[in-house]
Image 1 (cartoon, rainbow, N blue to C red):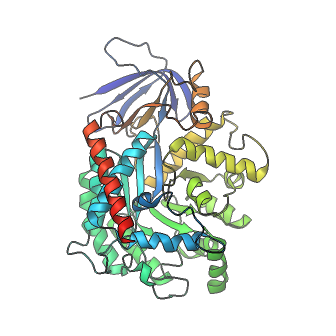
Image 2: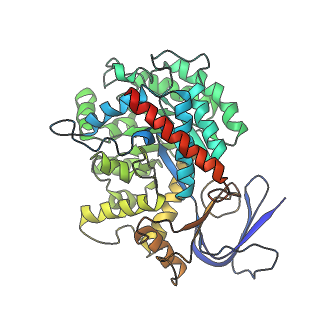
Image 3: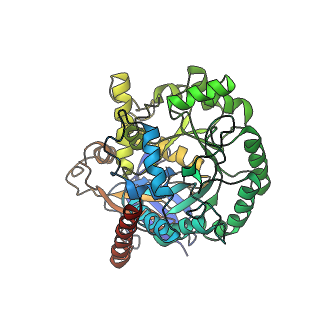
Length: 461
C-alpha cells in the first residue's frame, strides 16, 4: 500500500523545492519524490515546510537520568574526568527496568525534538556486580524495546571496553559493568544480529576508545565484525580531551587519530566521535579517509571538551553529523545552533557554516548533518529521496517565530530564533507520524516511569 503527502516546500538533498509530492510504501521507504506537482484533493497536505529528520549519531541513553545533576563544583577544578566519576555512580546502579524506562522517555523526547533515528553507543552490559546476566543481551534488548515502542529508528552499537588506559591498564572498579573479552563481544553481536534485523534496526560496533581497547583486541574485533557484516558501522570516541591526547603520545609517540589511521582500516563505515583535538595533518587525513566526524556540541560544551574546527574539516571535504551524547540537551535545532555559535566564538566571525551552495546557514547545516548522520547510522536515512526511509519533520508555519516567512527563513528561525519553544508540528519516522500519534496515555506513562527510575537511582547513588 502506498501513502502520500504534498508539501508546498520541502528540503531535498539538492536544496529547497516547491510543490513536492512524497510517496512511500508500507515498509516506510520513499518511492517517489517529485517537485513542481499540482496538489490533488486525495493527497493530504503538510501545513508547513518539510525537512529531513535528523539522525542522532551518538547517544548514551542512561545518562539522560542525571542530566542537570552534575552542575556543581565537586573538585577544585572540575573536568570531564571528575564528571566521569559521577557518571559511573549511575552506570553501576541502573537496572534493566530503569534503563528501559529512561531510554523509552529519551527516545520519545528525541522524536518530539526533531530526531528520527538514533545511534545508541551502549556500554553498560552486565549486572551491578559486574557478572553477566543469564541472557547476556539483557540490557541491549531493553534499548531495542525502547526504540520499538517509540518508533524511532535505531543503530545499536555494543561497546567493547577492556582497559582503563593506554598500555593495557587494568579496569577500575567503576568500569566493572562495561568489560568484555573480544570473543564475548563477537558472541553478543551474533546474538543481537537477528534481533536487530527483525525490527529494522542496524547493528554495528563501538570500540570505546583507544585507551579502552588494546591494539590486538581492536584488530581481532574488527575482523570478527567483518565476518558478521562487512558493512557494519564502527564508532569510536577519540581525541575528546587533551589529557587523552597526551596519554596517547606518551604510550605510542603518536596522537590518537594519527595512531588510529595508521593501525586500523578507517573508511566510510567509521564515525570518529568528538575528534576535538586534532593536528592539521590529522584533520586532513581523517577527512580524506571518508570517516564521519561525530560532533556533540551541547555535551562537548557541558564537559568543557573544546571546539571542533569545522571550517578546517570542511576544507578537506569531511563529512559530519550531530549527536546529543549525554543528553544535557535533547533538541536537534539547538545542537545545530550550538555548533554554529561555537564556530563563531572560535573564529570571531558570523555565518561560518553556510556553504557555496546554500547561503542560509540552517539549510546548509541540516543537509550536511543529515547526510553524515545517515552514513554513520548505516541506515537509509539520508533525506527526502527515493529509496530512503520516510523520515521527516514538518515545521509549524503558524509558530510565532516562523509565521509569514519563506521556507528557508522558517528553517533558519526554527534553529536560531524559536526561543527553544517547539516550532515542530509533526515528525515522521519510517512513514508513520510519531510525535502526535504516540498515545497521550503512552507519553504520560513513559514520563512517570522515567521520573520513578531517576528517583530510584538517586536514592542508591
